[in-house]
Amino acid sequence: MFTQAFLFLSCILVIALVAKNQSLLIAVAAVMILKLFFDGTKLMALIQTKGIHWGVTIITIAILIPIATGQIGFKDLYEAFKTPVGWVALASGIAVAILSARGIKLMGTDPQVTVALVMGTILGVVFLKGVAAGPVIASGITYVIMQGLSYFIK
Image 1 (cartoon, rainbow, N blue to C red):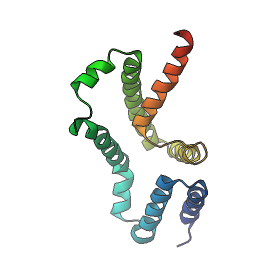
Image 2 (image 1 turned 45 degrees about the vertical axis):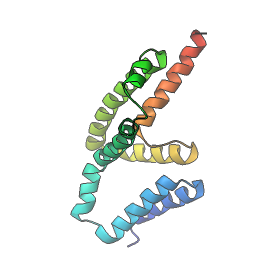
Image 3 (image 1 turned 120 degrees about the horizontal axis):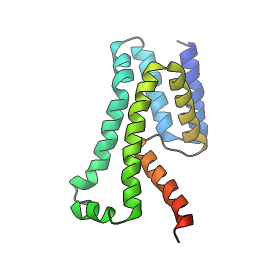
């Protein structure tokens, strides 16, 4: 039961508790439960291979809800393209989608990259108050670009 993997997960759990990071806490607890009850099963392999795609689907659903509820419509889309931030956001979204696709391929072929990415994400989420989510990255890139442009455009 107390394998190196379980010890590693326990360390991450402690970090999540200390940092009071609910998302990481839930994720680690879920993985620890899976490890205890489903270790070596097809369920863990399925989650490992399909989990990122499921997560992207859930995030996409959350992004589409404002369209479904009528909070965002064609008028908003039209208005977005009238502003520099709208165009930068569009480009950032495209860039993140392309980079994410390449990143998923890299993670599948190089386990060392995956370990470093996982630890980097955990450290960024816990200690730098980051969020582990792709569309949010596009928004962050947009913010950084717009802040940089604001120095040149007054």
